[in-house]
Length: 258
Image 1 (tube, rainbow, N blue to C red):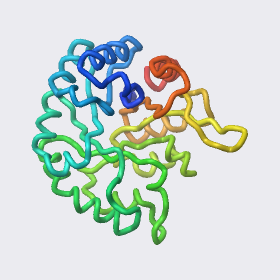
Image 2 (cartoon, one colour):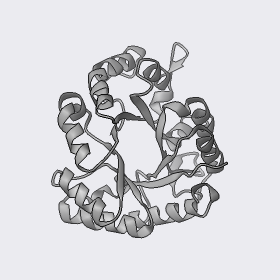
Image 3 (tube, one colour):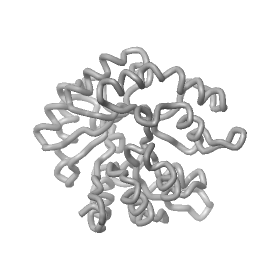
């Protein structure tokens, strides 16, 4: 029996339209009008307060499932970050990657240790800390990837992944195989497709317009219980909202999200 997968929008794709309160409200309406019911808040301007996020979500029947939050705030202002997420009812508090630590075996271990206190507080508050990968986390150190090291040195119930399927593929890792292996550590995925240019360069494109096997990715997600999936395109070659619409409509035409 299929599980119902939930499709959301990673707002980083439209970040240039979210730098003040008015623009944020208009952007959320446009995202809701496309058909998205869930969002990840990321790339917002300083004027977009928790109250603004809450109001826009309520006005458009949108739920905020996770964020990207500055790592320094998570580490040093953990209680306030938790309180902010409580305002707009968000369970996932995420970072965009391992920045400020060296990309070494010891660096990954130190990152896990440095954030362990915040991770525990977030868990105690009934929320979850989320780590977002790029391609560099798949480099190996004594036979283990950076992600392996992070997962081995963190609480499996408190420290989970926002698994970026594109960057896994970019690194030569099969995203579906990764989900099969680590599904219990994945809270959500990021979805964007890949094209390979004539010069061999890999680039981003809308879902189901490239080479990635999303059928396998969604099957693996069904099997392992990964229910949250967010469309994100870091850079777009067309209007950002049109890009989000194309990906939304292409995905929703498939049976996995019905």
